[in-house]
Length: 367
Image (cartoon, rainbow, N blue to C red; front, side, top):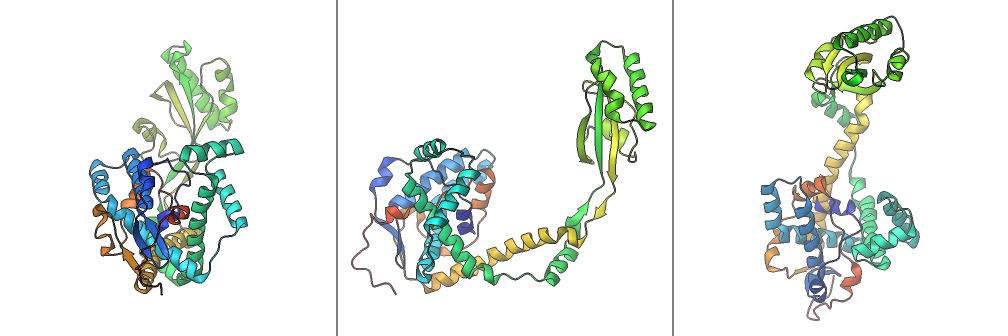
C-alpha cells in the first residue's frame, strides 16, 4: 500500500528546480484538503531522482516505473489526502510535544548528533525547520489515524497463528549448522611445507587432547607462523570453500579438522558447536508469524479503509496530462516496495504550500 510507504519516508529532501515552485494550480481536492502542481512536481522530481539513483533496480523495472511515475505519484497523493482529511474530520491533532519527540527520533535515526549537523542537513534538503516540522506533523497525523481506525480492525488469534505455522512448516526448517573457529599456518612465514604440516599436526593433536585453540596456537602466533584464532560464527552448507566444507562437515563438537591447503596457508578448523537440522517450535517463531500476518492483514484492511474513505469523500481532480486516469483504482503495486528496497520512500507534501493555492470559488460546499 503506497500510503504505508509514506510512514517510512525520509524527512530530508533535495531542493527542487525553482520553476516548480511557481505553479500553484490545484490538481486534486479531497474534502477540504488540496494538492497543487507544486506538490506534484516536487514529489515527482524527487521520485525520478531516487529511481535513477537506485542501482539495484533492473533496467526494465526502472523504465516501467519512470513511464508510470505520474499515475503513481497522483495515486499516492490521493491516498494521502484521503487519510489527512479523515484525520481532520476526527479532530486528530499533533502536539508540539509529539513533534519534538519525532524530530529527536528522526535525527537519531539519521545519525545527527549536533544542532550544527541538523542545520546543515536542513540546508542541504532545501527545507526550513518549520517546513520540516510540518512534513513530520502530516506523517504523525497519518500514524495516529491508523492507530485509531485501521489497527483495531486487525485481530490475530493464536489459533490462526498455529494454523499458519502448520501450513508453512517448510519456512521454519532450520538447516544443520556448525559454529567454527579457524587458524591459518602462514605460507609466508619462511617455513617449508613439511614444517608447516608438522606444526599443523602438533596443533591438531593438542586441541584434540583438550587444549584451547587460542592457547595452543599462541606460540606460533608470536613466531609469526600462524594467524590468531578467527571465530567464523555459525555456518551452513554452502557458506565455506568446498575443500574446507568437506574437511569439517562430518565432525562433531570439539573435533578438529585435518589441515586444508587454502588461501594464505594451511587452515585448521575447530567445531565449537554443532546443531542438527530441526523444525523450529511454534513458540520460537510465534512473534515472527504474528508480524508477517499482521503486515498482510494491515495491507488488506488499509485497502478496504481507503475505498471506504473514497466512497464518502468529495473529490475534484485536475491531474497533469501524464497522470490522467490515476483513479482507475486504489490498488496495491510493487513499484514503491521495489524502490524502498533500493532507497527510501519520499516525504509527504508540505501543508505550507497548500495555503498558497486558491480553491476554485465555483466549487460546491464541502459536505
